[in-house]
Image (cartoon, rainbow, N blue to C red):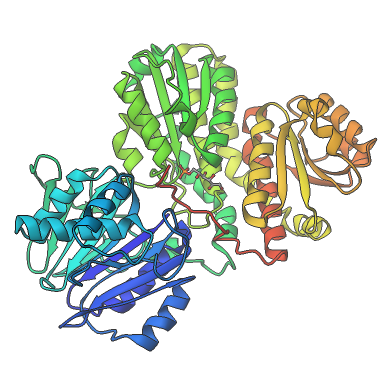
Length: 615
Ligand code: F6R
């Protein structure tokens, strides 16, 4: 959600910023803009639409010279997507130019105050208010830009990551962060600013991630000056060496990132358990659990907080934790949890799941849980993300960068990590028979090759997609471990193909959704051999007798469902708890193909953002 890129150094800033904005497109946006200092003044170009459009506009209308600049992709919050509301925003004097990711909640009262003092506004945005507030503070207090930013930010309520430049001080960029991510890439006498490391990873592996309420002055020829916004304390920049490489964030021959990421799952799952799972020794090693075992062993319950696909992974985890480790689990939408005055005690363990590690609601839920004494464990994909830093301990999924907005490999790797945690706790508690435990470890180790086999359904899935690409409504049904997979299948279809879809526990169908079934309605049913197979077969019969079109995900070799369904897609057999890792694969492929056939923008669906940094 909103992307920021900035550069100061000896190269031309323009190509770095444009390419960086393209790398951040996955975050979701509706307009884009750039500001460059050409040696005497700041030139600006911004537009509604894609970065490609901005590139054309900028190349036709402004000087592209200069080694200082900032750029932005905007996901509209205050004010519709149009040229005026796009960033960067310029202050009334024309001196200051800002890009901002986040929301300034008290902008209206600040705007009123500034209007009284003679300021004019040309957009509907909170960001234009912020840049003028900084200008006003700078003039009134007669302070330098860094100091003015600091004072202004102590007056605002909300969330932000900002980068701001001053045409009278073209050797520096001032940046600050609260709630939205911001990284500084540190090169040889050059600095890069970005919402994540993807825009600068080809130039440098060294990065400083700003913490909440930190600001930095990034000045040419100088060390980064980092300080706390509230109390002015000096902080020392912790320069991290990043392991990310450029190939990981490019499409590698696939038409879309989503397809690449679907196919990466065998590798991603393997990377996620590599070094943690030792089948020969019957061991699971996870530092985040080992170091805090007491907290887990003494927990009255586990509360899982997450949003979207990560919440679906949480639902699968609920089944696994209760089934294997016999620990009571509640799964909560982070957005509900944070506002509903939940009962939280210091005997609770809260697990926060987030691919991006930046989801605002999940972050707020974590803060609430910590404030009430709970121990918070994070499951994130993005190293160094806000959630990874905010939690007491955690385990990374090693999925690699997920660029497609629709989450795929994050889901299966989250389930992998959570399965490891559940197995480990089950063993520690002695509640899971040793022989079953060992069988489980062996089976988990075989999952990457089984996912490879599930991916072989692609050609068949494409044929099924062709048949159903014009559906207007779809139903997804599953039971037990595969109920969350039904929810996830429906979410994947809606978000990238814009077809209405509902996921339901198969048995709930009789309590309402069955009324929807007619011969136009495709019903995707997960009917694997393990896990209430006979019950699901009965549900399939109920659909068939109402003439619904049945597409069933079955275990290899199944013959009973084949008799009933219009199409069957086979996945390899596995332990019931691990079936979601396989059954989800054809459903991901199905939504991908349907979306492509409908001409949808698969990697950047409308209105969606990869990283939801506002609530
Ligand atoms: C769906 C999807 C979203 C995210 C949700 C949470 O495909 O990507 O539903 O799962 O926005 O994001 P994270 O996991 O980054 O907290």
